[in-house]
Amino acid sequence: PILHLTLLGAVIGGVINAGWYRWLDAAIERWRGSVSILPPHEPGQPPTTREVLLKVAVSYACWAPVCNSAYLTAMPLLRGESLAAAVDAARRSLGRLMLLEAACFAPYNLFAFRLLPL
Figure (tube, rainbow, N blue to C red):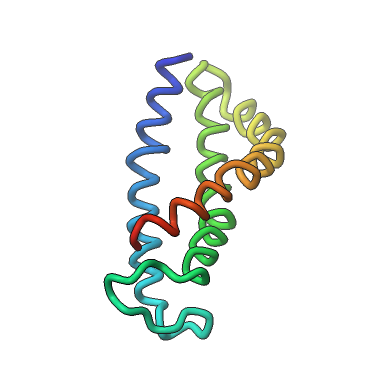
């Protein structure tokens, strides 16, 4: 089990997450000034509160369900369970995991996205 967690953490939590956040940062740069809720931004300035809230909301609504579903499906598959059983386990657990995501990662992301440049 520890090898499975390590593998999924490195792939999903590391490589794929990094790609997602690079894409999201680039998308926010493209949206800036063209989306009414994101006014133009001075380069080198910290992200605005709106930018941080948008990044947290998009991450939670778009990326978290994909990432969490992948994890919840992959773990049973790595244990040798069938695809049907893995999908069923993911379906049963995703709601609770998304609540945990909202309670833990959304507040963390508010802090991290404010301090880390876009």
